[in-house]
Amino acid sequence: MTLHCHKIGSGLPPILRSATADLLTRHGPLLLDWVARFGSPLNLAWPDALQENLAALKGVLTEGRVEHAIYYGVKVNKSRGLMQAALSAGAGLDVSSLYELRDARRLGADGARLVATGPAKTRAFHQELIDCRALISVDSPEELEDLIALLPADAGPQPILLRLQPRDQKKSRFGMPADAIIYCLARLAAESGLRFDGLHFHLSGYRWETRLAALNEAADLIAEARRMGCTPRMIDIGGGLPIQYVDQVKYRAHLSAQTPEDYRTGKIPDSFYPYGGALSAADWLSELLQAKMSKGCSVASYLMHEGLTLAMEPGRALADQAAISVFRILRVKALGPDTHVIFVEGSSFSACETWFASEFLIDPILVPATRPAAASPPIRAYLAGHSCLDEDVLSNRWLTFPTPPRAGDLLVYANTGGYQMDLLENEFHRHPMPARLCVIEDAEGRLTLVPDTIGEV
Image 1 (tube, rainbow, N blue to C red):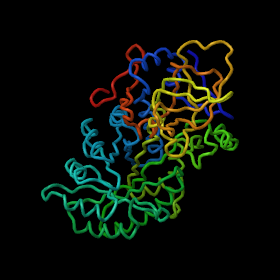
Image 2 (image 1 turned 30 degrees about the vertical axis):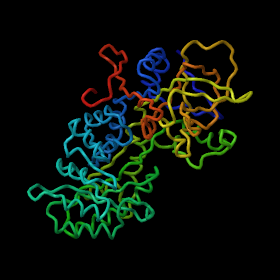
Image 3 (image 1 turned 90 degrees about the vertical axis):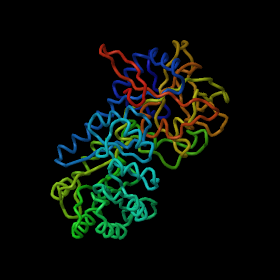
Image 4 (image 1 turned 180 degrees about the vertical axis):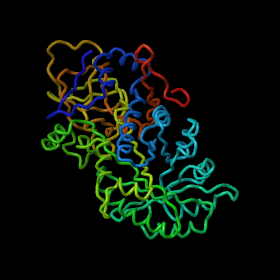
């Protein structure tokens, strides 16, 4: 079975991990069989890819002699297999809801392996976090008071972080400015039931320079906390480590060459994720550790000198190359002499960038169900879902297919593990939720699927 990467302009074929490329190039009939058995769209995950990503980040931190704690941000993907892979490889889990916490506990994670982030934790969520002594990132003085009211009188101290709102993030609804942090530190002095473990922040965007600025603010507050008698041990920089979906040169060429006519809407989206960024997550982290802080030392040197652990919650970066989404083509409909719409069995709820007025700037991969007819002319098409919503569009970008797709063929979107495949998925029109399975090799090296459920991966 031949793999076809279809181009528009300069083309944006995905970077593929060798295991994924091998499935698509050598095992097309197997993929077709899986879709026939489990339905479309079909989400496939490779837990070992997450472990490789984790090892790369740990390697950078170990080389920099930085004590560290990495928590996989499980909100990035609902896969239990990826959660289990993170735990098996020595990472913790970042949980943002009661239900993520319960899944983590069912997988065997104790409180020492868990951090809870998010600004709107319920009373029940707080209670179960306290019950297992998970590390809680406190978003506000109000949340601190909620926690204090729940603390049992006879238990050991509950570890917490205080979430900083950096000065250049004043419009954010997350975290606390420095004066509120100081207030909370003073409040903690009177509460033996809470243990201040350090500071947390999480910034939008993917530039390590913004994390450096926030670390400088955090360093001043760490020093103030110690003057107040606290013993912080950690600074948590959140997530936002980038991943590279497509070749950097091709991505830049595409952005500079695209025009409104490249989109069926006649409009270029205002913003995109940096799909063809210059840095991998490991390179990004290395740049941050070597960067100079305002005191003149590097970030790595500061952390070592102060005896601080660097914590982080990568989600997307750990799910890099860990999943694909496979859609079966339902129909190819001509709209005019040179334009078509390709309807897939599935919806854009399972490939969600268009719902955010953006685009998933990665070309899909066509896996034909049968040998293509000889000498067919290329077609130009956009991709639509099977719902009755006119907005249900997987790609507003016009795609040029050198080999015309046909009903029954597969369209594969690579690298959908990070917020792409399941952020908006639902049972609209009563279609069942897409199946999700983990791909593993058996003892003979044959590809097989296992259920992506707790206790089975």
